[in-house]
Length: 175
Image (cartoon, rainbow, N blue to C red; front, side):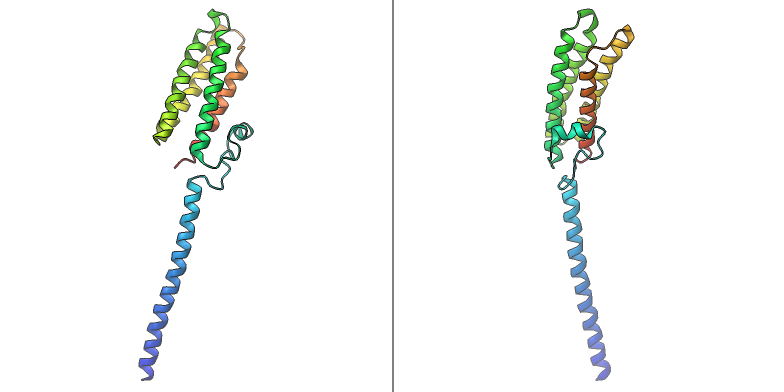
């Protein structure tokens, strides 16, 4: 009887401990998954932390926690800045600005396509389109260097590249 009672107690103890441990593991696992889920959607994160131009990023994104919303706001800002740069390039003497006018048109097309990619959750295409915008801005700068002329819209052009850079950073938070 003593052996059977000990055996019953031992089995009951193992089963009880197993359930207790399993409940704790399940609770811990659920808590961990909730944490990861929040991180994947940008909850509790500063989306601009670690970006090359964090202050500029904060000026556009603010305290937004959703990487989708932040990315969309950033692309809309890029569209606005690119339109302004295109307008500035169009006011330059024609012989100086045809490359910039053309590449800013291409950049605007890429930005509109990047918004479509974002809405369809195609982050790969989103990143490609943003990278293209940076290349277009660089091509504008290069055209002036090749002519040996000063680059009168350098600040606007650099701003476009900086915004595109942190847009690519924000895209890393999109699941």
